[in-house]
Length: 465
Image (cartoon, rainbow, N blue to C red):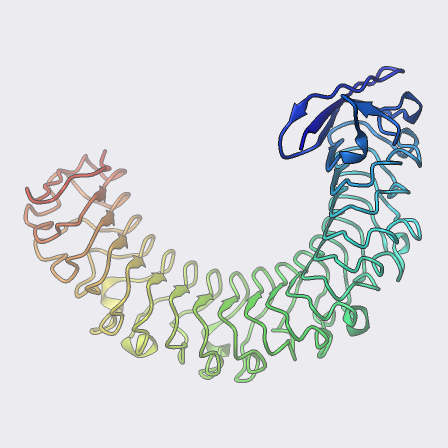
């Protein structure tokens, strides 16, 4: 099948030019007005003997189109269009008479404050609708705006001025993006129609302490991911959907975790509570007890002075950087034999604060970040499986010959910005490390002499004054 590329200009009598291509129909434009009278977009226009009714994709983005420049019958006769891009223009409301064949509609980065009643009543095949970065308010939408979109799966309404979740959402919707609006309250009644929702993104709204009451998300039984970044929440929202897999709550005001705060979501695999106000004394030792499926836990940027107790034994990644940790003991890490990545950067740890046997059960640990602490030498008895070790930004002035005896699989070592001199690293320090590829010693007191064993295949090395 032949396809066509149509180029429109902003002249009074725009001319259609078509040439045979393959796979896609594309309408490219640099214009401020579409003139139907010229026969460019109308159903009778011909291009190389082929009707424009064959068009599948039309791209009119990055122009100066206003509603006045897009007449009601602009797309008359183009009944096969599946993708229409009108983004980055100057539209103030949703254009009428859009092709009913649409599957993807891009209207982001306009000035749209209203979707007229019935404007989307015929687009029953529409699967993706992009309305982000507009000026939509609650009064610009009503309960019928999206109700006829029986195939809609993705709806992006982020970066608008909504204060509530829109009503009339279709049950086929899988992803709803409402980030960076002004939403203060989520009501269960508004979500009843969207029972198939899998991803709900509500970051950077104004929910506060009461905007997500118990049961507000109860209709969303299949919800997989909930983003609540930056909403001023002071606790984990109650009664979340039981099947939730990812709960993303960074940059809120959560100061405590009780024994049952997470009990309603036993299937969580990802929990992000970074940059809240959690203190060790207010994290219950059974807070994580029911999260047996948890694989990733991010507690970075809180006020923890010691590791939480009762961590799920299936964890693969644990982020604890930028806290106030002053001690490490074996007990909180006991049983974490599947942990692969552990970040303890930007804390207040000294070698004497790391208890004997702390690393003993971390048999699968491959990446350990101890950068920007107060370590004066390489901690002993590091995990045998370790491949990447970050020690930059400490107070290390000497690396002895036995520093890495316990880590034969080490591939990358970062020692930059310590207190090392030219001969501070013992000649034998890297013996028995056949996989070592990177040794970074930049930013020390002097350029550091690095001696790799002859059997090591040398890769990139970083070093310097």
